[in-house]
Image (cartoon, rainbow, N blue to C red; front, side, top):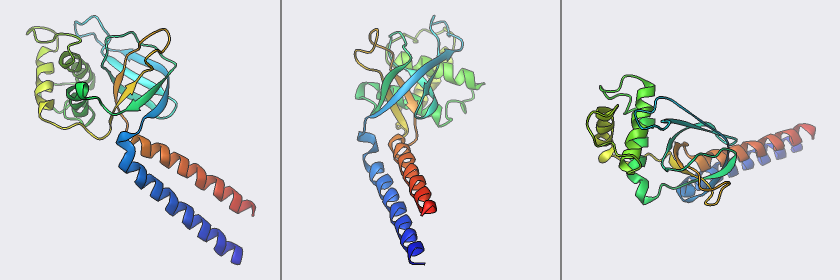
Length: 209
């Protein structure tokens, strides 16, 4: 009976510790660099007249497949270690645009008809505001959609879930594309996973006892 009470007390203490760690992590999550392993970069979709692919997904070990938006005019390399970092100042407008895609606001626009059109237009808008590709000429494919998305995002905020997936500076064979991704409370998810693993180990030890 005493052992059961002791195990229950230990279990309760561990749960409270896990909750405390998670809450602490919430306060510092935006200032944390979180390493992720990108083992594949998926791409496709219509180019929208740019000559480039306009749909990207990062296949990661830590968070599964992440919807992503390219923010650099470099080649893409899979199977390298990326890192989730805070969005730098020069990419804040692009992050606002990505935020409006991830929260469903882009798809809700009357001028957007499908999920694919939402993603393609969002990617083109991001390239436009980053001056990677000039989309200010009327008549280009998706021109009206791009203008509507940029206007929608201009005075909005960056969602807390938006991170920059940053590739290594000297990753093989050279610089690789960085991406904007949505990872809800990324550091908290990692902490929660570690906490659950701790609970599982404790549970197994308790059963053996």
